[in-house]
Amino acid sequence: MFKRFIFLFCFWSFSCQEAEYNLDNPFDPANMDLVPPALFFHPPKINTSLGQVVSVELYGLELDSAAAAHLKVKYDWGRLKYEYITPNEFFTGINNPVEIIIQEEGLLDIYIYYLPDMQSSQNEGGTWSLASIYFTAIAIGESDLEYDPVITILRDSNNDPVLINEFGMGKINID
Amino acid sequence: MNLVGLCFAAEVTKTVSLTTGKNLAVLRFEGWGISDPLTDFLTEEFRSTIRELEIFQVQDRGITNEINIFYPRKKDYWACWSQECVLDLGRRLNVNYIIAGNIQKKDGDEFLINGRLFSVDMETMLNEFAMNSSGITDSLLLEMKKMAYNVSGLPIPDTLSVGSDTSQVVTTGDLNRKNSWSKLPPIPSKIKALMMSTVLPGSGQLWAQKKYPGYGFMGTEATLATAALVAYIQYKRSWGDFEDNYDAYQDGSDPHDLISLRPRVIQYAEDTRRYNAFMRNIRSVGASIWIVNMVHAYLAAPNDDFFDGEYFFDLEYRPDVNQFQFKFNF
Image (cartoon, rainbow over all chains, first blue to last red; front, top):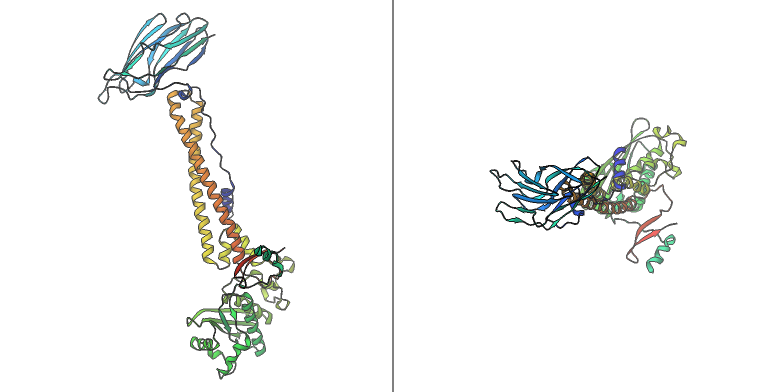
């Protein structure tokens, strides 16, 4: 009886905490000032040191369904040495995607294809990583990472272009 | 202005009792093994106690005893213990209720008091009372007083045995064993009901035999408490989800995860606010009803005959102005 009374008293007298929050995570696409659908680099700024291998993700924000992509990325080839690329979730279905990389001096042409299966011939779209690029820092300084907005394009299974409103930039700082 | 004036004139306001308008006659108790004067005295004590409780309008002894002219066997009401006889007398006395009873002396100092309450209007016996008393005359007085409470449908105050009437010194065996230093000061019934309803809403009313308001307050508070408990459980669940998602959002670095965590954080925060606001509203309503319940318990509880002080406040009906008035006493 006494315990019940104590419980009743606490129940009536306690004050519940109000939920306070601050959605300021810098990696949150909502904080990147991008108009979706968009492509951006994640993370947008990387600090590394000479000789280190760094990876940067080519990320899509609220993209529509797509079956293939041609991504042209510019970088400072005097400071960064391209190593390799791995395709990520965006074009991964039941089958792993096919990627073709053409590297020139400071330019990367990345072709990624969704491999159709019995259920679908393209992905479902959304906010996903398309691929990761690995660089080795070879000189001190700062290198910008940019998409070539003219060349870069995504296409759906009907070979129609997929809308991309904006392209984000990236930066790698080498100490 | 008139009302304010009446309120401040509380000290001089005559207290008007809330009577039911029910006329009651108490027939002279039949005494077996006890003297006639003592039987008369006990009957009159019983009669006056019921009158003081203000539940019934008790007919005066002189009028009631006029039935002797209707009943040839003087003082022999024992024969008038049956329903037909008592109801016949009740009709002759023009009352709504009538009580007949007897006091029997058993072995030693033991007495058995029997009483029956009849409704003349409904032509039926409403209640029958029996009490044992072991002791002398004072104990019999006490038992008669208790029976008066029973007849009036009121709870017998715990402190009845330490009443202010010095003629009613407790002499029963059990009470004699109590040490005088251990007796607490008597708590008036109204204060007792107030305290009970403060702890558990409706309990004071139930104690004062006001069952419907008692169960009403208790049920209302229980319903509100249940609703608040459900809201609290929902709140706790939402709060847990909010914390989990918000922590994941703050520590996360994958945009895909963050973009799905963001709306969840907002949604769970909104849920916690909604449940919190709901609980606050329930608390406000519950607290208000709780206070009303406390005041009601104070007003609904019976007056104590041993308590001759003034209450802090009282609600009374004044028929001359046809108004209820709230009185403060300082």
